[in-house]
Each structure stands twice: as C-alpha cells, then as structure tokens.
Image 1 (tube, one colour):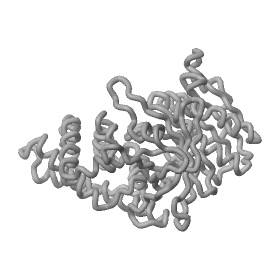
Image 2 (cartoon, one colour):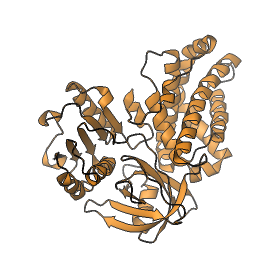
Image 3 (cartoon, helix red, strand yellow):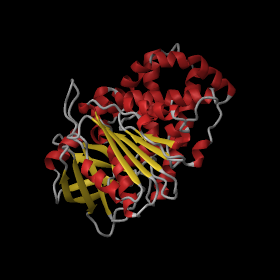
Image 4 (cartoon, one colour):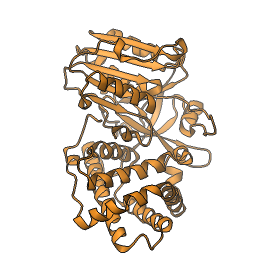
Length: 407
C-alpha cells in the first residue's frame, strides 16, 4: 500500500474479448514455465546490451534470481487482473515499479528492448507451435498496456521533478560520514555544482546511489533519506551487506563503507518513492520497523521533529539485539523531541517477540512499516486482527518484489 498514488493509475484498460480469452487459456502455461522464460530473457538482453547489467541492473539480485522473479510476477499479476477485474487493483504494483524506474532513469525506449528479448524467450521456451499468432498478439497487448501505463506514469514523475525523462543523475560531494555503533554509516552529500542544487523531497523517499567499481561497472542501489527536507543536503544510511550462505557481498554497500569519505565524489539521483509521510495530516502516526528498515522511519521522524509536530507518534522497532539496532540513539533523541510520542523496542537476543497486543494503538492512526518479508507479513496480520483498515497501512520492503505483499 502506498501513500502518494497517482489517480491515473486507477484507470485500467480493458483487454479486447479475443485477447482476454487467449490470456485466460494460456496463463497456466506461461506461469508453469516462467522460471525458464525469465532467466533466458535476461541472458538474451544482457548479451545484446551488456551495458544494462554493467551500469543499470543490480548484479547481486540477478545472481540470486530476485529481479527475474519480480519481472515475471509483475507481468503475470497485471495480466491476471486484466482478465479478472475483481482481483485487487494493480495500482500499488504500478506505482512502486514506476518510482523505482524513475529512480534509475528508465526511459520509454527501454521498454522496446525488454519487449524484444522477453518475447523471444517466450517463443524459445514454449515453442513456436504453442505461441501461435493469436497467443503472441494477446500477450503483446498485455505487455504494451502495462508498459504504456508505466511510461505515462514515469513521464509524470519526471515532469513533477522538472527534468527531462531519465535526467535524474547528479554529481555530489560527501560532506560528512557518520559511523553508528551498530555498524551502519550515514553519508551526507551536497551538490557538486552549486548552480544545480539538490531538490527537496518528501519524508520517506529514497535516492539511487551509484558506485564505480574496480571492473568499470557503475552499479546502483537505493537508500532511504534519513534527514529532514529543506536543507539542500541529502543524507542516507548504508548497512554493509556481507557475503553469507553462498550469496555475494553487497557491491555498492561494501564500496561505500570502504571508500566513501568526506570529499568523495558520488553520483546520486533525484529523490523518488511513494511510501511517504502525509505531511498535511494531523492524525496519529505509527512507525513500525525491523533492522535497517528503520531508515525511512528516521526520515519521517526528522521531519516531525523539525516541524515541531504535535501529532501523536508511536515508534516501534524490532531487531536482533540492541547492538545491531541501526540509528538507535538518533531515534531515541528524535522521539524525545516530539511533544506526544512513545518509543518501544523488541530484541530477539533478549527473548522478546514483537506483539502489537502489548501496545496501545491510537485511533485513526496511519501505519508505516518497513522490514523483511516475514516481519511485514506478521505485522500486517496483527494489524488486521486488531481491526486496522488496510487503507491505513503503508509499507516498504527493500527487495525487487516488495509490491507482492499487496497480494
């Protein structure tokens, strides 16, 4: 669920009856082979366009298959909704994807590249006898309906930011590096060119940060902003992702921890993201996080403290231990600065289990959640059991397929 929804995303086009019938008939076939189609698609696309895996796509997610599953699930979910409008609306899916695309500088021409190699992979896996002209036409229609909706939405994001499509990258200098006891590091950057200042942003948004790695690749990762808007600076906190259980270490997070210091030149994007605090509201707010999911909550708390908010604010955090809790002291200080706020933590090392039944939840509050998949699913279930309307629950997961939690 998101908080800054474009009304244009509410309009879902209708499939022509003949295409709808073909999609219904072939969805099971495509779904059954999707784990074969998507890796082949990416191999084809990266062979034809090696610059995409070098400079745009997350190589770590690719290595683990996360990005492939996200793409496949998004198209299948959209197709399923087109043939069954009674299912949950795909607006959250489209908004989340659109904001992430804008943060990467995606432009309309790139959708044609994806289309070419995706459909080549579908034909190769399913066989030309299965992908008849009618089947191809139906899936082609689904793809371009979704692509056109995203292109229009992303164009709107670029216009709102006052930039040409894709012109979201800015060179900055690190002006401060702050080490946290938990091991995370906060970097503060300002515009390298004072005639091109960094823009303002909404509490809860993120930027993409680029790192030029030793092999020449420019890899991008997205980090939530942890400072209050209006300063001309952007601050983001990075947890170093270590290699474990056969997964590689985080390339960008490791590079930043090792090399970025005051004076380091960094490429960042304009802020985007649709999980944002409603700054016009006066109703209570509940911030619930786990691990490094605390970062967008810190950005929201910074705004509330800077504006001397009188909103009832409840801050809840779950972590492995007090020692691993990112920005713990900062959250405590921000909460203490607010006129009407409570702060509570749960630490697994101390045998504590997160339980909303132990918390007095304010009436008419908006709930903002960020953490791992299991944590978010458990918290949403507890909120539902407590009678909290789904429309008041807004969440973000730092993964390619976070919107799937809407399903």
